[in-house]
Length: 236
Image 1 (tube, rainbow, N blue to C red):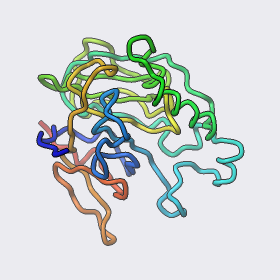
Image 2 (cartoon, rainbow, N blue to C red; image 1 turned 135 degrees about the vertical axis):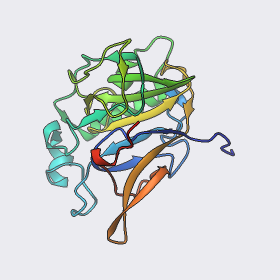
Image 3 (cartoon, rainbow, N blue to C red; image 1 turned 180 degrees about the vertical axis):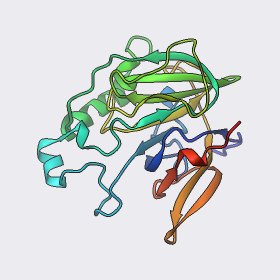
Image 4 (cartoon, helix red, strand yellow; image 1 turned 135 degrees about the horizontal axis):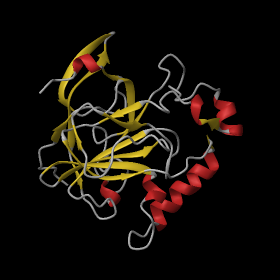
């Protein structure tokens, strides 16, 4: 399938260094499906670049496999999430409880169930999305920021937000293998029926050949070590 639509350009919704293990910069659909508006979706995690395998948690791999990991042992859990555009908050769903720790088997089982048996006509979107925010960024362009930390959402429906404003924190709610930010653009505010829209980020840095290099209107791959700082943000 030939992709013909130009990506919508938005601001990077996080600060600091990140990795995108699922990104349209590597494959489309980025999450293996077009359902729930995820065709061009991104997942963002923080990792230890100096440890083998780039783990997203502070404990050892055997500890993760045998006992799971408390959420506060993940580097990205609780990191601030920022509005990617100027817009209006269309949905802001909070109160969906996170599991206290990750567990590989139960998280895989939950992911399989949601991927194969989720019915948008009767199932609650929060069982997949957890706590989430949807912002109307423009005509038929809606940004979804998903799996947020319970109790962290700082905006309400109908509120105007500015690009770069703190709106919540990275969490592990809903259908989530581990704490991360799931980010996508859609043509509708209804996650259950929306189509995904291609998206690029107006500016960030990528670490290449021992140095940070600025990328403009870029789409990171799943190997890119990317960084965005507040001082990098274009002011309007």
